[in-house]
Amino acid sequence: MRFLINNFLKGCLVLVPIVVTLYAVYLLFTTIDGLLPSPVPGGGILITVALVTAIGVLAGNVVGRTVFGAVERLLKRLPVISLIYRGLRDFVGAVLGQRQTFDRPVVVELSGDGQSRAFGFVTRDDLSSFGLPGQVAVYFPQSVNFAGHLLIFPRERVRPLDVDSAEVMAFIVSGGVTGQRPESIPP
Image 1 (cartoon, rainbow, N blue to C red):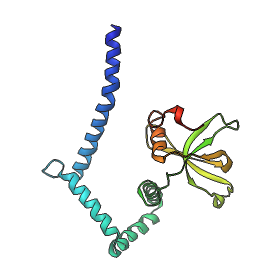
Image 2: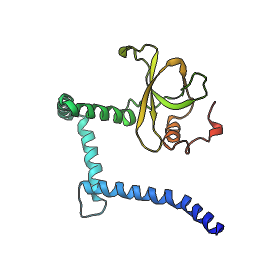
Image 3: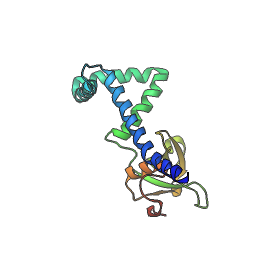
Image 4: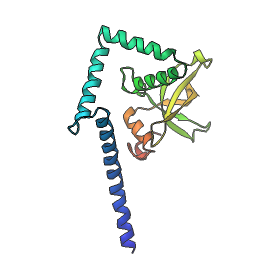
């Protein structure tokens, strides 16, 4: 009986991540493919990619900048919509834009004795405009999903890491399972 249980659990360890990943890819594929229906499977994805690329090209010229600038000004004036729009615009710009924000990984001492620490990313070096001189903004992604927390710390409690930021993000988002092994992380 123990043999069956152990092998069943090993099978789950191998199979569950594969099946869930494939299912997530399938859902993503069918969702995007269904945005712009096409009689050819995958045609909706090709049309969507072409459309997004065309909008990117349009946004790069004078006419597109004028049109998208007008839409952006309108969205910024609408009370609740402006909060959602600005937050999403800044977050997407931080991740995909030319001004990538999550490229400065740090470890922060959460307790005065240095025994409790957390990985994060410095997003702003100076918070004097908020009346917080000498403080920095540190974003802490949550494990297993893509939400996070932004906390404020005295600069002296934040230490930069000499580690690739993509590796730190993978480590945090996976709950510490993916990425560098714990013994190779600097103290």
